[in-house]
Image (cartoon, rainbow, N blue to C red):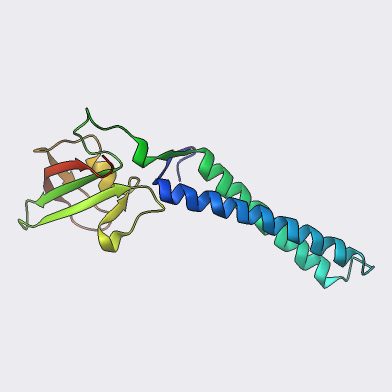
Length: 163
């Protein structure tokens, strides 16, 4: 994973992540109560409830940090203005013509949380997306997938998803 990269989210995904962050904070508050109750039971060295609550608290804190970091490095795809940009970018739908098979395929390029390869929604960070980013209609691009033979595609159409 890249050291510091932008997390592209749709507005709906951002809202889900913000809700999850709030849920984690509420859960942590409940775990703090569990820890207080467990401490009241005496000897902490052999107190399974206490150790389980501490573990739960550590896991929630780690998840809270991941979600917070993800949100702080995020950009809302729906808000990106591509009115003057006809090239392949995140938040765009691209139609490709495989020059070897003469088949057309359409992809939406979104963030990692929205990626759904079975439905041709791919992350902006996939090798395919990275090969296409910045290219325009009419460009021919060599695609070199890992552990598969390379092939060429022509970019037939590029359009914004959220405009």
